[in-house]
Length: 427
Image (cartoon, rainbow, N blue to C red):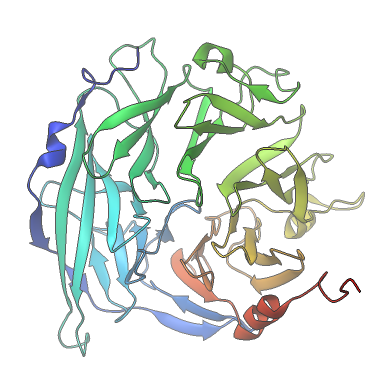
């Protein structure tokens, strides 16, 4: 039974909006040019704490690009924002407590976040200062509680639908201990929350709930590891949660119109499939491959979720004499594509970020030296809304900071003008 009336309180969705001022901190940013690639680097943070962008498949940039969201370990940190007009930082907290699981909305100047069992929408109004070093900008938050859960709680970050109508998340920890997690959607206008699908007990659910960037009906999620050996087989369509259980596959997509999870890529035993994200034309990007240990062979791959066709957009590499550390320069871990389809960005264990052209797959090293192999945060880069910049976690300055790299204009112009395949016309 999928009725949610006993599990969630939707009345909070019609609660009145409340507004309150936010604390604004002075700029601490620093600009430099990558000496190897010439890319412009803007470190949003330089304080001696750990600051990192939102996870790679969430929206760090507000849709109007006025603020870049990030998480901080600094005192009274938590969720924070960088004001792009002035470089100031905002503490994004509320009178009722701190926020987590955040993502910017698909449209406008709003973001969604988790506060306890409540899901909130917060819109930001910024009156920028002409001189933030002497007089801080004024930032006001206008908050609306979409819904409050009375059973279970959020187990993933939030993720918005591309049409702005819904926000999705994973929910677990129900009073019925025999019940597994659910993937839920929340109507942004009404606050109504409902199951998209229910899943078996963990670890058969691996999180990473994310809405297609171009299709308002499709949500992907990561399956759990499942029993060893139960990973091979034909392309699989689940008929229900009991059929899904224990399949041990990573890539799953569910259509909110029929609510049936589908395993869109069947991995072979021993095959790495990891860190998927949506791209254009209903393609899922992911990293993976099969290699001989100690090499973790990992290509950047683009999957057509309908045909099952996979192409390698960025090749990984392994060779007999390679060490794991050496091969890690040429194998990829997180992958995210620009919304305009021109670029795919991937990072590796050395903190290097490579761009692959969306059409030709030609590689361009964007920036490097942002992680020491074997320790520290991965860059896990995400994109701005225009396909011009990537935001990522960098250890280049010593501790972890939020950094934005701008794609050189010459690269953008070359990709925009690319007419490969069109030069020979039929006579």
